[in-house]
Structure formats: structure tokens, C-alpha cells
Length: 99
Image (cartoon, rainbow, N blue to C red; front, side, top):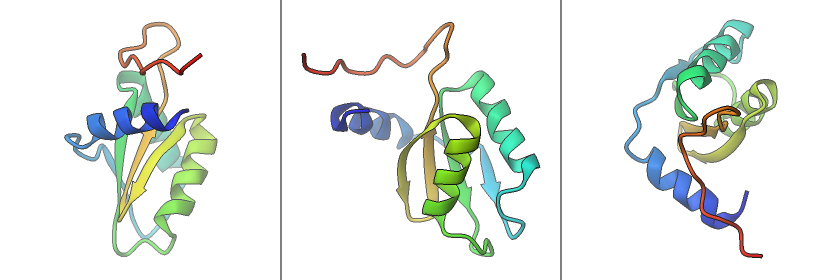
């Protein structure tokens, strides 16, 4: 993903509300399942990391992205933005890379 594409996704994510939260249990299989289910209807999701979560947001972002086969767009404060394009009908069209 290019920096231009990442910037475009960040601008789209700025108005999103978090679809799920990570709490004191951390990244559980149930949490990963809920993120995967969110990707069934959305390509870009925001996750909130609660203050009582023992893990760092950047580590959570990498773990969840790896397990859901998505990409980390940004980690800012205690918010994580992930992107996973729909294989059949992509809703978000990313800016093209320069050839």
C-alpha cells in the first residue's frame, strides 16, 4: 500500500465509529471472530483499545491484521484502523500507484 493510498484510507476512517473494542482480555479468538464478521459488511473498520487492556495498540493491530488477513492503516492513540478489500465487490477504490 502506498502512502497516498494510506492517506486516502485515513481520511475515510476519520468519520468512522469503532465497530468493536479490545478490553482486559486482550486479543481473544472471539474478538478476532468479531473483527472478521465486521469485514463481511465493511472494508474499513476502526477498533477502540480500552485503557484496561494490558497490550499495546500497535501490537494488537499487527496481531489482528495477521489473523484476519487485513492491513493496518493506522494506529493513533488507542484507535486502530484496519482495511481488507472485498474480493468480489470492492466498495473502496484506492488511488492508483504511479507507473
